Image (tube, rainbow, N blue to C red):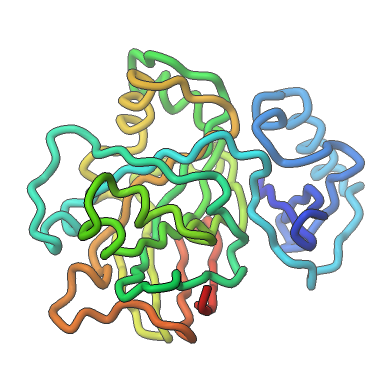
Length: 284
């Protein structure tokens, strides 16, 4: 299924994109698309039955597409997780996953405005596969156990301010947690529709120019290993999100003068089977 949320900020309603591309209202069946729903097999079965019966009412296609997940628990991010991205930035291939966090309040919809922070000179783009957790998981013993906890997948745009991240001391977090720095969606595609998360193409354009064109096959630590590994250090809960890293083509990895984002730029990104995003960058 392709689950999503539609409506103005603060007034989103749960929805489903059916096989004909029609937006269907789920609000009579469930209160929201969130961790509680993803952990409720009976509720998910009711949604599937309603979709098959054709009884779900249509929604206005012009509604704002919101982040597909409400009440996100935590966002755990993996840095330098593609061979080609590590190479372009001159970094060593990490021996273990590099972990940092983003706050849930960085999340906006896939077509919402993204704000260039005040004082920013190095705002950068990063298309990423997001993993959404649907089962509580701790100390996973195998890849199969880890993947069994995955509810689905979405597109994440891990917007970053490189000077804040790298040049201002301390950890990466202050370059990763600026307002609007994690557009998510448009859909949460359930795991049964993504048989191999290591066979997905990722692409990103800036002002119409293709900048990133990679594949999850190039991940250093594949999805199953990322989920298994994280569960050794923290409990993963339904509604948690994992951003799994970005392929080559970011501004940081390009020759000087690096083409960092500016007010007025338009970024578009897509992942095979997971939809497409588009953001206009404005000043904070």
